[in-house]
Image (cartoon, rainbow, N blue to C red; front, top):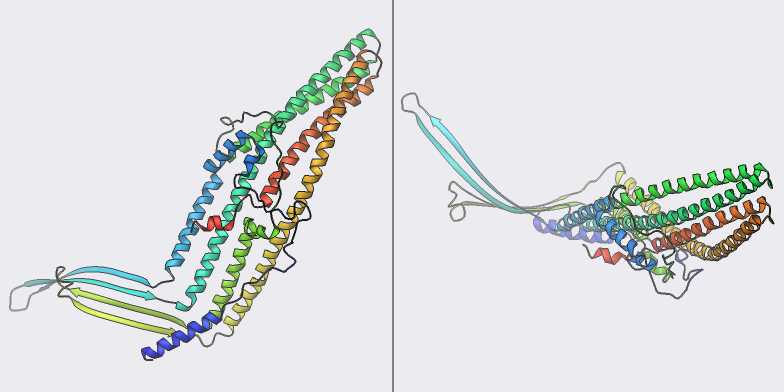
Length: 468
């Protein structure tokens, strides 16, 4: 085939390839809500990247900084991002012809001795310099570039998701340490209260006014509180160990100075417009990138019906002298274009196209499931926050009532007016009320952290796209 015919065939194949592009599947109209069921429906506010500062806990800022700088998973995360960026650059270079430049030098020795003559030796040197280009599989390059971009975008979103989860775990663990320290203080007070009641019971037993059974019951209650205190101290140590691991440190060398949740602020969070979540939540962006990759796979499968077109060209200089290789060397120039078309494959290409289309439909279903699940998660989290806020008011009121009830019961028992059972009941109610109050505070903090994560933690797809 003459060169003009090959060029014409190449152009026709390129046009056919352009027509083979598969449209990007879209979400159903009902997948993205117009407004939220809870929260400000017309709000346009989203978490900032430093969302943890809204809790107004300065030590938490320092802990998060350590996690960002020292966490081993985040360091691996950063290396994976660099690998993804290198892969994208390779794909970018692959869009263009590949230049090939080589230099070679060789020497040869030959010795000859005829039957009637002297031995003579000789040798020759050869220097070769060649340069050329290779441009193969031309029709699939744009689609391969689209696939590479989708992989890179998926890697960026995955890295953002890992970072968000890691920082959320660090903040939640930090608050758990403070909660446990609050509960330790409460448990110590519980033990002190129980021991005070024990002394009163002992005095009344010695005076013969009460049965020793009451003393035995109170001693059991004291020991139970001491056991709970020991368990809380071990739980606090385990929580510190978990946080130490997040900053790549030993628990023996790591500690936090804060001792209570009292000073930690519970911020209010209002989600922005629902449609913006599609570019703000990393797992949604990753699912969309996987969908784009599946679409590219369909296009690559369809391109298998088109010819494989390759272009090559080279120029070579050769000389027996290195100094003369440019000026007096022998020049050879070659150029070629090839077109290969598979005609029969027992329907393999058709089956591959159908396989890729089914995978594309599955990717769309996964994308929709991720989107719907994300919006549902936010609605549930907003409802949990409302409920926990209401329960927090009740828990605070119950704690005040329990403290007053125990104070009155203890005073009346000391005066001999109230019986021991009343004191025991009041004591247990106070213990439970304190624990409920602290548990509610941690649950509210974790719910806010969960909402920050559900809203994407201030991340936006275009922020990391700029790394390319």
